Amino acid sequence: MGGFFGTVSKASCVTDLYYGTDYNSHLGTKRGGMATYSQEKGFTRAIHNLESAYFRSKFEPGLEKFSGNSGIGIISDTDAQPIVINSHLGRFAIVTVAKITNLNELEEQLLAKNMHFAELSSGNTNQTELIALLIIQGKTFVEGIENVYNSIKGSCSMLILTEDGVIAARDKLGRTPIVIGKKDGAYAATSESCSFPNLNFAVDRYLGPGEIVRLRADGIEQMRKPTEDMQICSFLWVYYGFPNSCYEDRNVEEVRSTSGYKMGQEDTTDVDLVCGIPDSGIGQGLGYAQGLGVPYRRAITKYTPTWPRSFTPSNQELRSLVAKMKLIPNRAVLEGKRIVFCDDSIVRGTQLRDNVKVLYEYGAKEIHMRIGCPPLIYGCPFIGFTASKTDMELITRQVIKDLEGDENKNLDKYATTGSPEYQKMVSVISERLKLTTLKFNSLETLVEAIGLPKCKVCTHCFDGSSRY
Image (tube, rainbow, N blue to C red):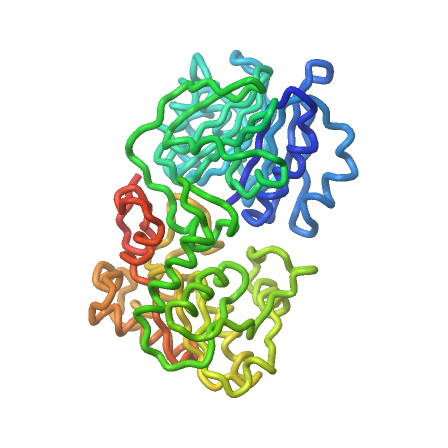
């Protein structure tokens, strides 16, 4: 996915930019980048590979070269960013959190207009550069950003560092968030509000879908009003989000805890304890234990000194190794116990199957898995939240193909909680993962826990409901 941070201050912004960007590190693992602007030095940019090291360790040695009162930073799971452009709109740097599914089509259109692409370090067109080229088709930044909104399929939120402040533009349907923070003499915009507390920013507002603002040290200028239609990704609360973060004023930890509590209240399973799978299953597990009325114990723990991130490599073999190495089972808690384990989701099921095997080996008597979201039936065309290339990598689609002979047959029935097809699919998944029981959260409970109207929350991966 990815996350960004930008700030404009009356004083030097470098320290806030450095730490604020780092607080988005749980959202991506490939590239990190920062750009600052000062009247004396102009634009300064650096990009580092984060696949073998963390953001702070990469940027700290060269931090003194950055200067100025405004800057933007990115943790990216896609291409190298920021991109620096000189155009009729002036000089600017840009970072994006985006997924463009019609990139090849747009690339051909731009090449036909005698445009060119320079950022080819990955061997492919850099989608942030493509977005920048779409922007400079406009006579103004607003017109150019609207061109992005109207041209791409997928989603795109962005920060643009100009010689006159930072422009923040949220995705047309608000699929990804932008939160504005404020403190004396400074404003900031970020994907994750957990960036704010330790930098003394307070949440000022949440940008609406399609809204565009310009941040200056002394205030905010609204350049485009928000639209009413919103499709914010429900997976932000289930999986992506850091527990301290809020989107649309709904806190991640509160949503997970509330969702788990509601599930626990409806459960009649006789167990000894509840445990959340670190990290994103912990909030759900704590709520589940309260709702079910049994103790919460840490039967499995994440080794945080060297495995702080939840995201794992795209290579399947390495991903399996990382999944095993970062979670340590506790035999003293597991042995002879009937345990409910709470986790955020099941994508392929590979990691969970391996974890279940280990838990049994360490003495667990029964393993009851409770998942914080409904089954993932559809791949996401809007946000890149998994490394899956096709829907057939989803364990649900594999089971549906085995049951129906066609992975695309009766998907609406398999997505309906409680239907005969749904119950059969869940039963097969449970058997394949060697679970005592398996239950998924219902779509209704998840949406109720989030607290927004269903029409404003994207649940496409569960029910296929959202369209471009």
